[in-house]
Amino acid sequence: MVLLHHLGRSLLSSWSMLYDTFWALVLGFTTSGLIQAFGSRRAIAKRLGDHRPGTVVRATLWGAVSSSCSYAASAIAKSLVDKGSDFTTAMVFMVASTNLVLDLGLVLWTLMGWRFALAEVIGGLIMVALLTVVLPRLTSFTVAAPGDDEVLADEAAPTWFDAAAFTLGDLTMVRTELLVGFLVAGACAEFVPTAAWHALFVVHHGALTTIENAVVGPVIAALSFVCSVGNIPFANALWHGGLSFGGTLSFIYADLLTIPLIAIYTAFYGARLTRRLVLGFWFVMSVAGLVTELLFRLAHLTPRRADHPIAPHLHLSTVTTSLNVVALVVLAAVLMTAHRGRRRGPSTRFAVDPICGMNVTIATASVTAEVNGATYYFCCPGCRDTFVTRSLQERGGPAIT
Image (cartoon, rainbow, N blue to C red):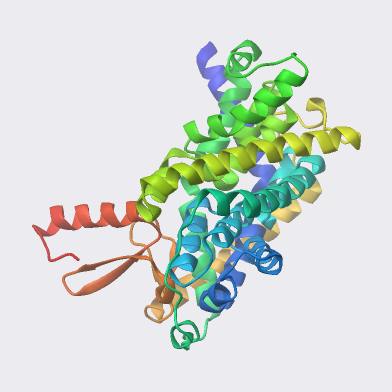
């Protein structure tokens, strides 16, 4: 009975966090879907052919209005590289799309307060600046630039159906991360004692704690598979478990360093370049967390753990409930629009990854497979390999290229 009592409290904590952030998730993903549908990735790729300051600024802005899903970001970055984007600039785009997007900021503000949301923006900009300096010295990845005809080839006009499909695709893509993130955070609030957290990182040792926590934050992120917006509840648990402000920030920044994503980088770019990329990300994310903490200390803006409890009590506030009702209406409209789009037939501009449900731009897809004469498009090599394996098992060895 005691175990069931604590389990119930854990689930209630998870539900409370989801209740507080549901409207922010729907708003963020819907906005991202609109931008992805009505933007031209080929035109973007042509304008990201170097890593000069102006180009980096464009990549940062485009990333900030793109998908927040880490897996989607890695696939988009690869497609940009394939279409002629500079490698460093494509990585800047990827970092911006997972650290400077609206939905992430809204969830951070709701769960952890405006100071964390502001720190996410400041740290994201610091990471962009550091990547621009560090990555060109670690990597020399180049691809043949596409011709003007290829880059400027006409694409089918996007529709509202495409925007709805992108929104649902991104939500489908991160549903596991979100679910696990909220459940883990609720479980941590109820079952993990403070002493257990202290075994993971150094606490109460002044400057040593500040530096060590900023370094270990990305390591914790790499060992978890929770990424994108789903790592915010887990970050909240770490913060209340004693991880420093900078360490918590470096953990949040490192949602591009989970083991599944490192495997994707290896498939995309090879083991040698992936090792350098991971080391570069680790350095940049740790330094960004450390510098942001120091800046907030100087400005006397460091948040207090008591300001936002790890597991807020479920309270049906009028504002949050109203926002959630509006979000439900918006989500219902997105679902109906996507359903109508599917009834009209397949899009000529986008395809749906048959494994994870993500929308993939056909013109810039970097991972495909041909099965019995039909072409399928995927967000990453892992989804393709899973699909190929299932096809072989179900159809007894079809022709696959």
